Image: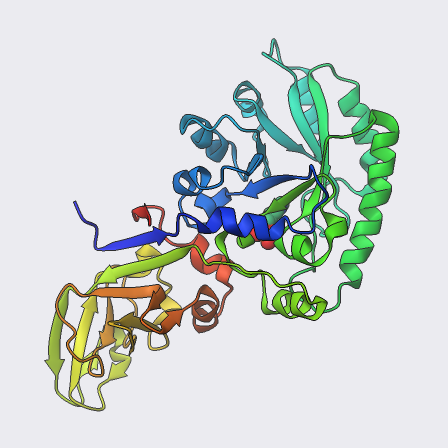
Length: 375
Ligand SMILES: Cc1ncc(COP(=O)(O)O)c(C=O)c1O
């Protein structure tokens, strides 16, 4: 059965992009490939199979970790999000490493009955992001609590940056690095050397090799996307070339073509009125597929190497485009929503600008129901 809306993944891109991010790493530094949220919309099964050199995978939830195990992934998996206290034993039995920042989680594991092995845990330090994590002053207590239970095995310490992508000024990131280094000294003073010390999201990995510690924890770069324009500028200023290959193309087909007279309305709310005789194309993709409603009357798609404007509102399952300037466009022609056709390209960044959001959200919200094909 051929789907009318689908995603194509460049089979070589994720591994190539990971190599680009490892460039500043000391020998032996590991990589935790962040493939949460269906691998940022790219398809978790596909992407996991396209990253043979990633030593770890990082996902958000227990469900995502169990899905990877059910796909046959035997590599270490780090759960970045919260695991409900009642489900900790399921995570440990599947040998999923836990990110720890609640005393209740430590206590619940310590009180579990028999376990096949101790829970692998990574303490997360909130060095200033104001999100998950223990404050630096609590690192000593948490390290002692974890070390005090035979049911827990402390194998990592991590933090996450608050303001490394969105700015050209990295003073706050530097402050977070300093706070993390103090926390690491404290934790290792109690627990000894920790094998997995990780802070580096994509922007950190590209900008500051000092953030690599013993493991990268990168997401967006794997998919060949830049975390932000500021990161691109900062990397260029440093003079270190980074050659990312975007991994994803998002495609559909024209399902109807008709010619409307000048002055005709298009779509719900009559938000568009033709200003000329218009060759209208109907596409079977809408906001239920992740094609953001904000793209109505704003975006372009590519047909036969040419741009066609999206006209009228995006519907749940349909969108309309102006094909007047695409000579030869025919029923069931391929339409590129995201990706390239001929010399034209629509990037996740451009789509993010049209929709008032960022490239991360554009790809992460592509419906997981759409088929992903590796090409
Ligand atoms: C805790 C954590 N680590 C790493 C990442 C990866 O960040 P990036 O996609 O910017 O590389 C994320 C992304 O959301 C995250 O939440």
